[in-house]
Amino acid sequence: MARRKNRGNEKGQAIAKLIMEQYQPQNKEEMQDAIKDVFGPMLEAMLQGEMDNHLGYTSNDHGSKDTDNRRNGYIDKTVRSSFGEIPVSVPRDRDGSFEPQAIPKRSKDITGIEDKVLSMYGRGMSQRDISSTIEDIYGFSLSAESISNITDRVLEEAEVWQNRPLKPFYPFIFVDCLYVPIRQEYETKNCAIYVILGYDLDGIKDILGLWISDTEGKHNWMQIFDEIKTRGVEDVAFISMDGVSGLEEGAKAIFPQVVVQRCIVHLIRNSIKYIPSKDYKGFTAQLKKIYGAVNLKAAIAEFDRFKDAWKHYPGAVAVWERNWIHVEQLFNYGSAVRRVMYTTNAIESVNSSFRKVTRKGAFPHENAVRKILYLRILELYKKWQGHPIMRWSMVRNQLAIDGKIQERMLKYEQF
Image (cartoon, rainbow, N blue to C red):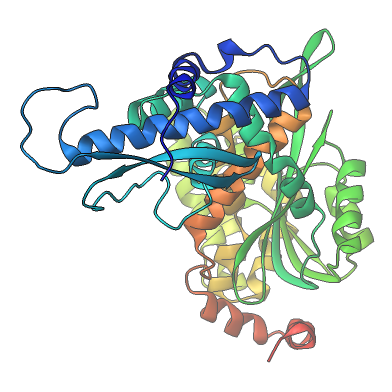
């Protein structure tokens, strides 16, 4: 059994309180060494707190005790972290009943603390909030540099994820774009973040990738479609999208058999620009009778009534006349398939989740955006739990009615 050195304890307490203020690293390597040096004392401070709670008194309490159990020195062990191996002195008690939680007995891996930091960062907490939370829970704080270094370790993992092989066939993919402010030299610019969400043959959701560009445009989308094809996607049945000019042509150039579906929700938004607010409710209610009709014949009849009822707003009617093909083609498929096809709500929900962690201000560089969005994606994966979307079996059955789509699905089905 090793005794803890007083000198080391004093230095450890100082580091636990001041953390990075005791160091002045000049480069990444020195920062790594500083964090590695700091982690040991921080863990020891945690363990001391656990021992205080276990015994019911602090180490400098010389009063009467309610227990005969006492501290019994320390045992030295080396634990693993993402920054390398760290020596730690773990306190012991006389009757051996102390069960440390920070570093459980027989455990030599402390990446759990770092994983908690990553999880909080992925939920959109600022570095200051993370530091405060760690201090509240464990009794010590982490500097912004420490948190940045912990979260930086996911960049390599994110790159592997971005370039991973994809499945050969996706019945549905949804494409969309959001904008995030990124500092570039002497200015801040809103950069486009391209996102693709896919449903595989089992109805499992997956984000196929993230791409950052200065602007959104058909040429960028075409390059992205070409990239996912290079990563293994051979065929896509349906793409649901908003109204980006040229996106449909770009998609069909890479996946010739794909059906491109304009998002009905976006068409509604575009058309109500021409409608006074007092008429919104009546206008949208009549539109719902069109895309919610039981079959194409009923939809055409409702569309004729719609055009006649709202002819005094020609701009609104023209939006639907120009895009009637995207309403008409919905009725080639069953109602369960139509519900998947006619809205991009699924990917808009993903982007809404992204905005929760990107709305706090400009990012210093693209890697900072990649890091936080990748961590957010990991949180979404936990939420989805690898389960298929609701009523997927009904969607599959209705897709199978179309012989050509059924043939394509069977080609890639894994039995």
